Amino acid sequence: MCGGVQFKHEGKTFKVYFPDPQAVLPVRLKSGSHELLPWGRREGEAGVLPVGGWARHESILAGKWDRFFPKPVRLDLEAFMEKDNQGKSHWYPVIAPNAMQALVARWDDEQRVYVVTITPTLPDQAAVHSRWPRFVSASSLV
Image (tube, rainbow, N blue to C red):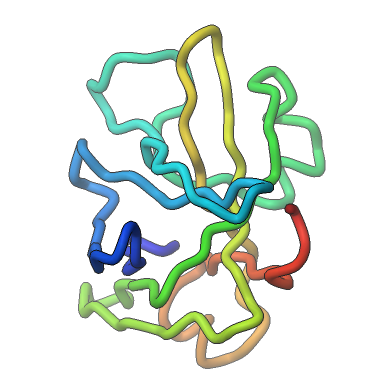
């Protein structure tokens, strides 16, 4: 489900993990720059947007996110981390021209980003986790 990411921002490399309440993700803007937005919402954290850091692609298509005015965005990452069924972390590079898909959800002044997930399509992905980040062409969603 993508529990961690690595990215560059303003010349620095960041490793961010979802459980950290300060976790942010680099949302690519139309200008080509990036805005760091809060990664989802944790249990007990103030806000109205959904608890968690992920949005199932099927639920987006079914309209379950519509009340949060979802905007598709892309995350320009160097790598992401998945934990397997035994809790072991595995890092995977994000290979250009791919970008991880996410959505920005809004409610009043609250704005958070959620990683879009799909059912794994490859056997090696399914062996690691039951959900996998959705990737899109780096030129889309701009």
